[in-house]
Length: 372
Image (tube, rainbow, N blue to C red; front, side, top):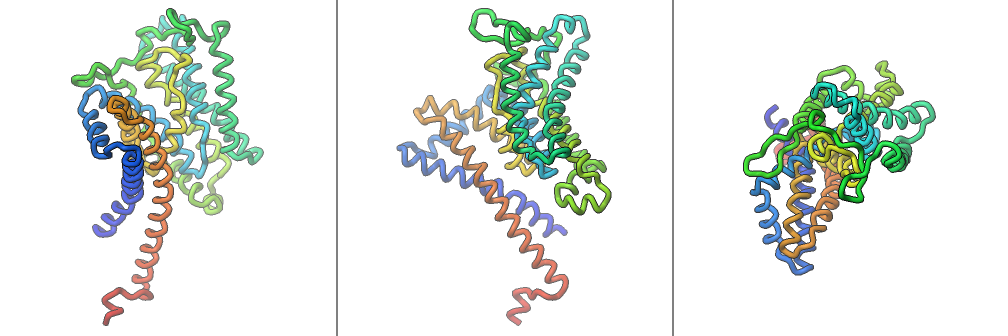
C-alpha cells in the first residue's frame, strides 16, 4: 500500500511539475534568444519575493484566483465548462457594490452589512449561471456557448447600469465612475503583513472556508458523490437513480454562487466601490488554475499562489529591462503543457493499472519471471 501511495503521489505531481519545468525551459530559450540571461531574470524574480509587499500582494491575487478556480472546478467535476465565471463575478460585484453603498445599509450593523453584500453577490452569480444550466437541461443548449454569450450580456448590462443616471456616481477628481462608496461599516479590514505597506485581504479567510467546504462537499456528502459519479459516467449515474438534469442545474447554480464571491475580496477589502477599473478577466484565469491544480482544493491553492506570485514578480522585470510579457508567455505555456502532460500521465497510469491487474490475475509475467 505504501508503494502504491507513493506512486500515486508521484503521478499526481508529474503533470504540474513537468508543465512548470517545460514552461521554464521555453521561457529560458526565449530570453536567451532576445539577449537576456535566464538565470539573472529568475534571480531577480525570486529575489522580489523576499519583499513583504510582494508576498502580501501575491496572497491577495491568489485569494481571488482561488475563488475563481473553485467556481470553475465545480463545473469540471460534472464535465461542465462554466466559461461564464468572468461575467458572473463582475455582474455580482457591481450589484453587490450598489447594495453595499446604498444609504439605508449604513444604519445596519457591520457584520450584517457585510453578510448581506456577500449573500447578494452569491445570489446574483447563481442566477446568472443558473440561466445557462436551465437552458442546458430544458433545451440541450451547450453551457460553453450559453456562458460565453452570457459573458457578453453581463458586460453590456454592467456598462448600462454603471451610469450616473442609474447605479453609478462620478468619482471626485477623476473621469472615473463607479457605485457609491462603501463606508467603513461595510468594509472588511485587511490583515497586517509584517514589513508590508499592503495588508492581506481579510476575506482570504472566506477563500479558505470555501476550499474546505468544496473538499467536504465532494468527499463527505451524497451530493458530492452524485456530482462526481455523474461526471464520470452519466449513464451509470442514471442507472443508480441520480437525476442528471437536477445535478446539472444544481452544479451550475453552485458554481455561479462561488463565482459571485470572486470580486468580494477586492471590493470589500480594497476598492470599496465597483468602478470602470475594477479587475476583469479573473474568470478565465480561474480556468487555468483549476487545470493546473487538477480541481483539487490544495492543488488549486498552490496554483493560485504561483499565478499571483508570477503576476507580482513580473513588475520587477521592467526595472531590469526585460519585457514583463515573458510571464504571460510562461503562464500560457504552463496551461498548454499541463493539459498535454495530464493526458500522458493518465495513459501511463492506465497502463500501470492494467499491468497490476494482469499480475494479480497471473496473466502478466514480471521481468524476473521472463528471465527465468
